[in-house]
Image (cartoon, rainbow, N blue to C red; front, top):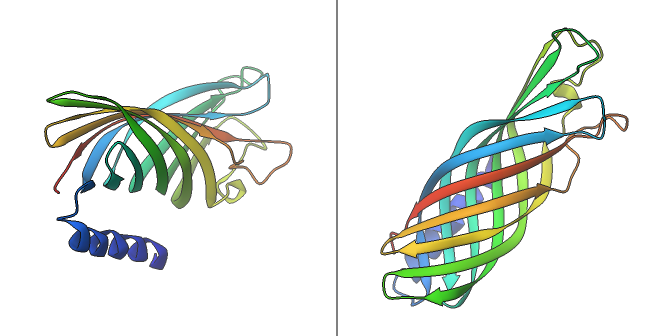
Length: 197
């Protein structure tokens, strides 16, 4: 919790100091998330689930920029074991994600700017929930790591004071502590931000 508070304080201080600096943007954002947990087991089927996210972003730079963010995410997914009758497992994580994106504007029109970006993201779990039906020896909350990381890339557009981002996150770390049960999380997010500065 101290790390979260520290990041928020840094964002606020940076925004206050740099509010009048050209090429600096700060604001809130909200969006939809489509997430899926993937395993290496060929017998297990994975299904995606919808959720949402919200948080804040800062952007430093004009044509070439860096964009750190602080996001509160809900990551859900469904695993089904066809070998067992009526067996499934729902995994839900509430996390704080801190992406640091590096981007460039590829088109600068009068009303619309088009951007592409990529960068790493650190993820820290606030809450873990695993609901299992008719699946002995399935993964549990205690088997899930509290911290992970991934890589995001995508494209966005700025229209007036609004910013729209579509991105894909490739899970690089293993959420599972069990060697025999690897578990990675991939995401697609669509978010809308409001540039206050």
